[in-house]
Image (cartoon, rainbow, N blue to C red; front, side, top):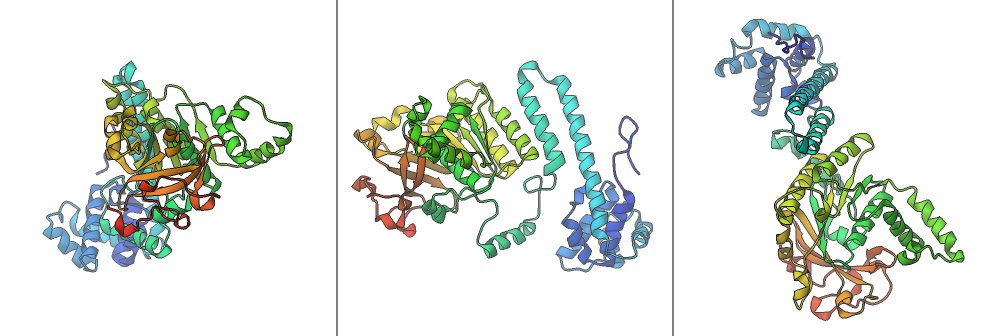
Length: 468
């Protein structure tokens, strides 16, 4: 029996296409795998068809061929024989197709109807909630509404949208092992780091934390630029500065000019060619900057979802979490909420996410001012949501040698990997960070930092020596 909505309209579905898919599986068991590439069991509108599909899946997983006899016996044992219509239903399935060749076509019809039903359901829920939403909760309502619609229209059936048999994930995992390049991982442009950790991982939060002057924004912008130069679509949410300031930072890097000189408009005439050359590089970057003032974490999530739905998104960067306009009883509560909201949208969008965090002054009260994971604890749950924690540290800042170009990238947390200290070359005046092994000059880091030779581009300790 087909149920109608309260307005009398029947939800989109095709009973004929559903029967055709199930009939194809009865005729050729291999059709089930081809259909599963396009639909899920929940896509069937009719209850009896969902029961039959799940029974077919169960039989094939157990190594039993699906035919009218085995399917009927399994339905009887499950107490579902009469519920699905018994012999008459099996006869209808057998008569529904003459060949299993077109199973993909029929499966696509079933899946598209399910998509329309999902959008209709989401729209009805949004409308109902809209009447009940208070004025001061409008931002969250809009974020949830957009998330629901994009999830219904674009993300239905993708990873993370519901329970899936773990065996279904094996083919992709095996392909990644075969190809040697995990899907969705974005190179940082720092070769030593990428050899150690692979790059920036999709669906995971990468936190960059540090005190002012350590170069965390410079590092993040360089990671964004490196990803964009590789053709990745990057959204840089800049809560602290303006788009114009971000452009000047990019010009400083690619033109090799002082950011101060560019900011004050004192560029020498003989350096205009360098700036024009930098402009030709920057204008080709698929890098978007959003400097909207007063953005909440829910607002950022909404912007990121819309961005992925309209132009695509490969990397999300938020600079920085302490400037989100969420409300709460304390700064810790605010940052905790923001971290969780942003963690969730990064997971749903399945892109790498970079969150910048400013540490408090407690770091500077220690003899060794290198940040530690414990320095994040005043920031709420950020330490917990992060899968990677990176602390840029410039010893020259504290020793009065701010001109030094060495920077330690302390990787304090790296899920599934060892922690380490990577070496980088940095010029904050030109907003440029690169791998130390690509730089000129000797390493000037402190001996007690345990640095090795210049050639390996990382800590002298081997991977096996570094605790997990």
